[in-house]
Length: 316
Image 1 (cartoon, rainbow, N blue to C red):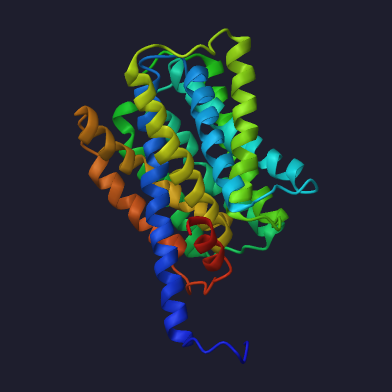
Image 2 (cartoon, rainbow, N blue to C red):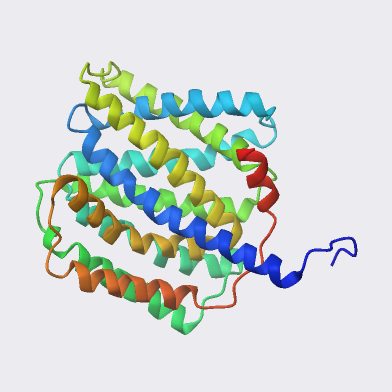
């Protein structure tokens, strides 16, 4: 312990737990908003059009903020951070949003995505040394069951072929790989620097894809731009920003486990915005998901403080 640090250890640990809880809650709400934003935006334009303008807008904003803050991405870390952006943003979103766009039901896509925590937990033990207890492993399986109950009414709907489901699986695998890689590399970059590089990478990727499909021109409907604002503010900055915070503070298994709560949260979003009534099993499924997360996260809270000053620098 630093002898010059006069902060009370109990107070500091309590502050860290509050930051962890706030980051976790923000992650669940904001990550869920992405599915709603995709439903809004693809009403007026193809998925690649929405994704291209989402990231062009986000890149302008985050790069401008980085310049004002004096943040300059380092050449030696840029390629590795860009690779994380390719996995966690380009391939994940490209796979899931395109798969849903060609007929995969959102609930089925959510169920496939719910396999990610299991995959991450299995690989994180030998690769990262993040051991899981028997109760935590049971919680991971229980989480998949809970998600299945939430999306039960959605299963079997849609008219997607093998390609659509393959895209969703690829997206899930890409996010899993990116999550493990980020935790493995532990790159010495700030959150703002990481978001800047990843957002620029995603913008370039989706602009090329949309241009190749001749979908780059945005529609004139102003509701499309409202959708862009939604996914930029809530899903990109809120969702991916909080994802990186929780990942760095709490580890790959815990951040992935929180995603079990996104299907029931998305169902609530859909009910409030579109009047879509959840299935009869949605409420029991949400309860099962919550119990699963409690099982997995039930261990001594980490007194992780390394991001506190950095978060203050980003928002100051």
